[in-house]
Length: 309
Image (tube, rainbow, N blue to C red; front, side):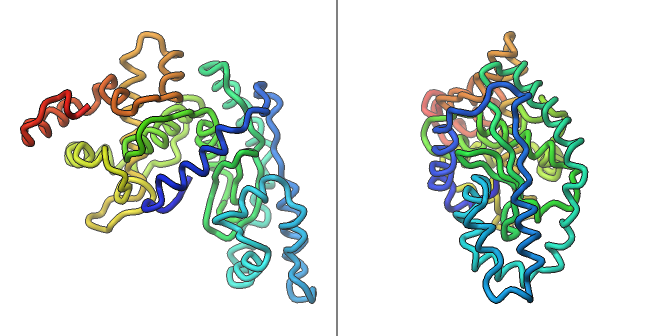
């Protein structure tokens, strides 16, 4: 999921409030739905550009699936916005025209991933996956109706199962506690950790490679910022103060979740805990991942450990 760092609290409240409100999804991974009819409607409209006297995307928007409806706010906006973007980026849209030709094999792989989640988290729910077309501003997201993939962003299907796995985990999460960078880092990084566990894929390789190569200074920095709600340089965008990539928070949240998982004797309970964090600071403390850096930080600032947590 990608949103602007400055709107982190409002956006996550809106998006995940809706996701957690959905309760009627199947609990059987074999019942999962893959819906591609919106892409057919999109190309039907696309082929009318230049010959239709009216906006050909009106029907695509008006009669679209719940996936299209869920992609409207912040993304498609309306039929006119979509029409304008398609005309400007016509050649870019055409690159994805046949990108779903191999989707049946990916669907089989995804069902196997869903079954793996069922093993680790028996109460898991499996939302539909909608393939839709937007305005080149989101590769994937969730709404209270399901997982939505921005098909125009796909160059191929190589990473699609990892992306679906990541978004699938967001549907399982019920993470509460005070709004702070740590909370949303655990939300995204926890999703990366569990999705990699069930799929064997990680969708944020650039952030992970950079994080591992610069682990020490990044941990020191994160300890000083984790209680704040400014996500710049950690989630979704950077200040360009150095050469770090976007989404380092995914790496940090992954590492904290991994450390917690490794410390627990009951691994199934550990997955339940990662998906249902109630107190992000307590979870961090129990993971032990940043202990050395927290101790250094409180010593430098003449504080006590209990003051930090």
